Length: 247
Length: 220
View (cartoon, one colour):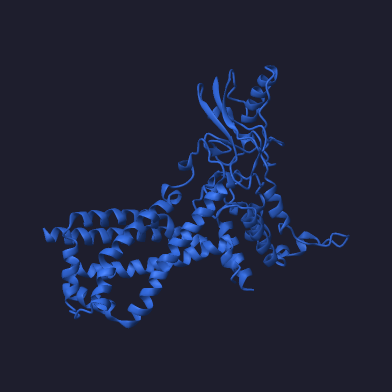
């Protein structure tokens, strides 16, 4: 298929940036979106032009690196996938595809479609961990009884890959789905409950410090999340913060 | 605890609490107004009680005004903070793909409601305060029905009422169920809560519209 691509080009963090049109031809419907971007970049390199910078790593939907806003949606017009799992069969011959970086003040553009998502790392460092002694005294995991329900919910929350689609798609650039998944995955397990109070206070404080917006419960994040992280986690985080604040 | 209300989540909780209070007030308001459709005397009795009871006049009324002001001010503060967080806008953004129009436009439905409340204050509250506390006119416990009935003679006023309550319905359709989520309620009862909230969000504004139209048509 032949396509017109409207891509955000920005030379660096301080450049104003603009949309630039490109044509790509003979794109197979079996290609992934990133492979189509590779074709475009090969074309640009052969023409002596600067290739489009975009994030990617595992290309199998588990690393959370690919971060494009395609035709007005994070990771494009499909559900439960990252951009690397988006296939060109979702588009038609002659389509015009708009490709932009994830937008949020807390995710500044580094170059073209690459954004800095270190804010997520700093939130994680503020409390997204448990402190355990691993110097030869590690307890057997099965020696602590955990209900199947709690284990399943914790595992669901832990599938968050920190891609930032929740922030990108939120009209308020809120990071609450990400933070709540990280808070929940520990709050649901006995190993995480010891530090639950400090964790939620510190992670929410860091989230606010990074300049993310407030959640207004539109639910867009849940729908666009490639891992299907539920809004239940945000409700749980709200309860955790209320509990922590009265302690 | 003061730190809690400075956090983004604490502000959401404060918005939800003030919303629940205003939702309760709406239910009370529509119940009293509805009496005017069924019984002139019952409406006069209820309105006279609300208009002269010191607890309602000097405690509940200021609390209600504070609740309204707080909800609007906090709504604007959060909207400004959210706008600041967004950065460069998208060239193409398909919001309808993943969220409802109501959820994305709470600020606009809220502004329409605010405009109506200002009009309602000028139209009803200020003359009422003038009657009771400034001009200190003699209280006639049977005056309320006639005043209400007369208000809905004007088609422009009725039109403004209907439009305002359409916006109220749009605001409530997202806001009511969203307040539960903000309070941390998301469990096996959430679907039922959402259905009840949806029912309230349609029924209460519809009743306000019905009352306005009832008096308009019985006037003509």
